[in-house]
Length: 408
Image (cartoon, rainbow, N blue to C red; front, top):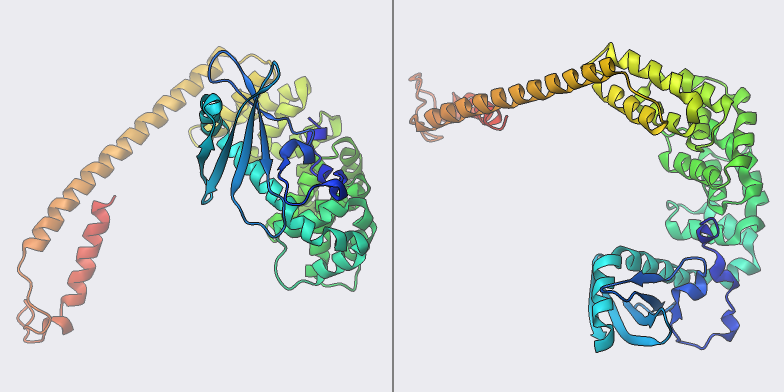
């Protein structure tokens, strides 16, 4: 599973030996991502899916070969992507029809993902030789871009990997650089997913405010998650240097999101979970049996504040059950009562809203039945002014208010 996460295996393909314009099977470029298996009846079959990776080509076809698990080809087919979501069969040999029908029904999303990945390789082949020849210039170009970074920019840096880690780390820590350049360098550094970048990324978590730049924060946390144990050590080392509680909470969240059972991490979750259980309680499930007392405390506090904190109580129960803890019968009874009361209150609100809307509809019908003069006719109030200069605006406000009530 870990090797299947490596999406740079296409770089090691022998491109010089490839026949021009030949389609390539997905497994040839991503060998650790298994082929598709379908079974419309008793006999399963492997699906070998092939794609065009010519940089100048824009075709939407997927060539499919249905292979028996015992050996031999059962038939071939051609699929075509129409728009962004529709996958249709263009051509299919009779012996492969049942398998291809099941493939389209069962694996449409997977095929769309694989198509996008192979087309991404085709796009990268346009710039890959240039990137390899001068990775420093590539990074500088991306840092200096006026437009926002796009997925292809991140893919380019990911492909260069360790070749650009040092350059990006220097750019990210340059005190003379603008905030935009430093943030962009940090996001590109996260895209490398290199172990050499872990220490620098752990420091970024302190100032990568998710309220200011959520993409940067998410990219950094995801990059640290990919390295797990090294990230745990790096984040724990950074934690004491947090300048304020906001920075400390961001580092704590990144530590909790690693999903590694650790006493220091559990202590941090315990500190924050009572302040914001909705955000933190789910992280307890990764801390093992040691987290059971903390989850019980969250449950007790939430039960004392139901119905306002019913959701927190239910989440605490889910975590406790996943950790193998038992729930007291009294606590379950309190939750059941709170859920019943909440359901009854909700039903009451719906009934009141429905009754109020019905009354408002009757009021609207009565309002519309009243004769109203034309815009330039004398107003119905009898003061001699034209209707548009007198009561027209007030009548429209009244009618709009009644309409709003009919909509609940």
